[in-house]
Length: 186
Image 1 (cartoon, rainbow, N blue to C red):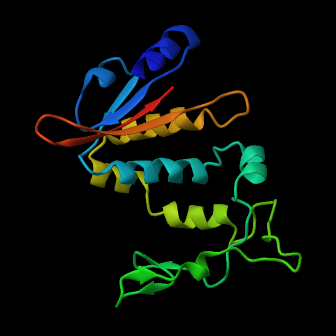
Image 2: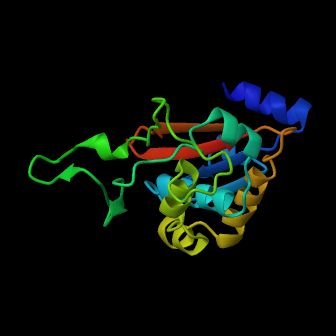
């Protein structure tokens, strides 16, 4: 599959970002390589999501009309101390009924196309990912701040109707069973 990434770089001016604990063959042909500590990929992605949401780097029309970003979530929904609402500690299970949307009298989910409602999915995402600051990403992942910022800006530059981005996420295993994570964007 990586053949198509190199084809896109060679013929379509695609740029490649590799985020991985190891400088590998993919990283050797990347436009930007950022090292991370093994197992910190979710913190890195959380930081990218926070950057994109904070800086309004999204295709707003698409997000509003083709995702659940404008849907209003029930008032009972909460996230506190690392747990979502509905957690039953004794059974270590979630009752997910509080995670549902609010529904109108017509039976359809209530929406806010302006994305201003504090409990619309987009604003709950902003609140949730706000903890993934660049400083936290640098501390947890060990990625140089300049590299993290550069990657966020590159990804953010695709937030227009005329640009596209693909994230390819893979977990690989070496002969020593050490996991690696990588993001390839084209």
